[in-house]
Image (cartoon, rainbow, N blue to C red; front, side):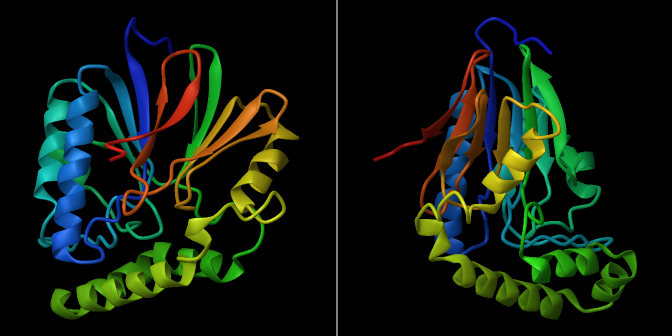
Length: 253
């Protein structure tokens, strides 16, 4: 795919709307909407790479309350003909058909490979990739199981949503220290995954979320791994202008 003159591709992830409180989440949601408004004229395509919500589950007639401003803004973008691609993450893997039908997103559950202006991209949330984390990889299979999802729908939303929010909070507390620093080449599992993938196939850019810490490093002679960071602390995103992909910060002050 070739970018139109003056157009860009944008990437962001890990908004974690709903956490840690309604007030903080609303403040962050407003900031995300301002960012989307700021890129609207220049965006050819937008990728939101997982964990938009700290928890999401769709019953047949029920979805979590809130997040109306973000949903409305995305609907405005897609109505204007700007493709918005959303990846499920480990916190919101239970997105189904509501958001694609109502606000026009393209939903992805697995990493995808794309090419823009001759540059090859590997894009995904990043959960379950690379070495280690066998406990989560097992849980991901459980959560993705249709029977387990059916069992969860048997619970009343008042209880099931409360239980899921408690679990999400514990997950964030467990990874909080890792979110504050670069762990090193031998411990950054998505960097390891990128290097191992390059042994089989060339990519110019690996674009992931999940890790929460903004990362922009070289993983091969002509290849970079960019982690998009998160919006609870860093407010970072990536921008591809047709020649290079750069990590940027929105409203740094």
